[in-house]
Length: 291
Image 1 (cartoon, rainbow, N blue to C red):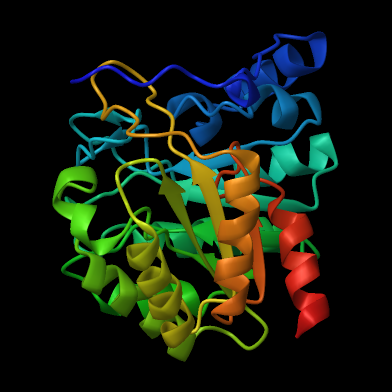
Image 2: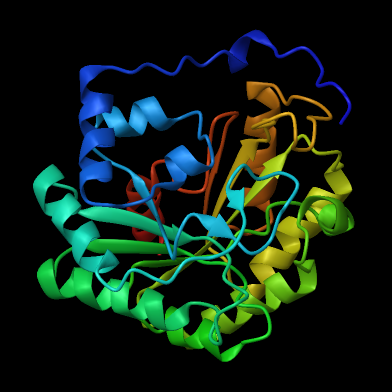
């Protein structure tokens, strides 16, 4: 891997292990839950954990793919935890959390790619917390397209699937994934989602994309019905991952936000430290207000 360019001053976020952060970490561990905050080495972990919130990662902590941008462990998968939904509901209740983001590792080994487990998790949470808001950030369920509709039609507030990057960079950045297939996932979700469920995607910049490619991505997302988009700076999580090609300034993120909005996306959050689940409930509410 080549070296990253020097990190600019606006990308010097400190991870603080305050008592509130440690309390959330302890609660997550005591319930036997996994968070993408920890597994993916999210730079916002202190901010979210200090408020008692977390983004949960179901279906284990080992991914059957090995994308070059991602820090999540790659290895043999484990059997799904049938009590995962109940555990998440317990965390939400104890932490007074009313809106949860739930993602997963990719499970190409499962016949339905994990769709039935997503359904069970949602049903268990809603059974215990009927008023809870849920955003699902799902993999592409590749090879099992019916799973998309099964998950999109669940009683959830947001169905999310991240494009991550522009089409040209897929073979380098997203091992085993396909840009056009991911667009089909989003299009299928738009057709099969429960009434009121919003459609969301997220991308990283700094991997070598250019503005015309980003404009095409914004157009593609609008075409398949996406309403919410997150745009954040790619940061190399370890030396084994892809290096950063360049860092975007805060001003450039504002420009990207405006470009995406001008293409017809309803709600766009763009800033260096924005991630898929960052301010998820706030962006859901803002998008609802625009509908």
